[in-house]
Image (cartoon, rainbow, N blue to C red; front, side, top):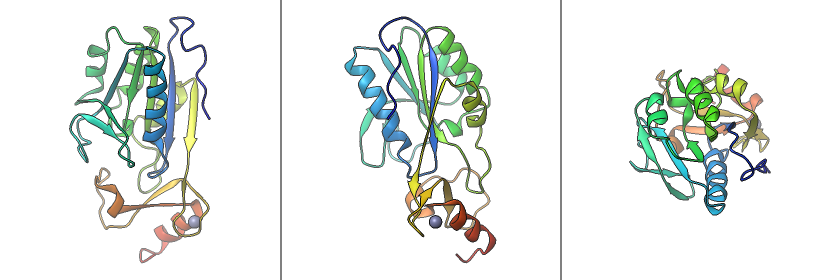
Length: 194
Ligand code: ZN
């Protein structure tokens, strides 16, 4: 389990990334860290891309309905403007943000802010997703979380799309995706009927 380095000691910023497939508990882990920061009396702001409107306009909601207030923003630049006077910034569904997000996170860290990012590391065909690869390169701390493959019970790192569509961003996850291990994901991609 991730333990915070010198949370309250000095005003030094850093970047954490929590990544993995769908159903891997990324948002739950983000919420756990943000709640701990709140308990430590740190000022926390949470952002998500305005595109992610699956459950609720103004809350980060994990699949177990663990709710925490958040602000939807249309561009990563808005996060800079809205993050004055905060200690910790949380960013959920970061894969849907624009390519400016890594630079924004660096700017926040330079200001002394702890930045915690949660996002999908790969899209439904296994390609690195949006700004996540650059964030992984720039982060001090990376946590890769795993789901369980619904086909064989191994650790899953892929989000397998069950419906026919070439659209990269397809929301409404539970019906449309399942977590799969590398082997079961590859089998499914090779024979579209599995
Ligand atoms: Zn499997």
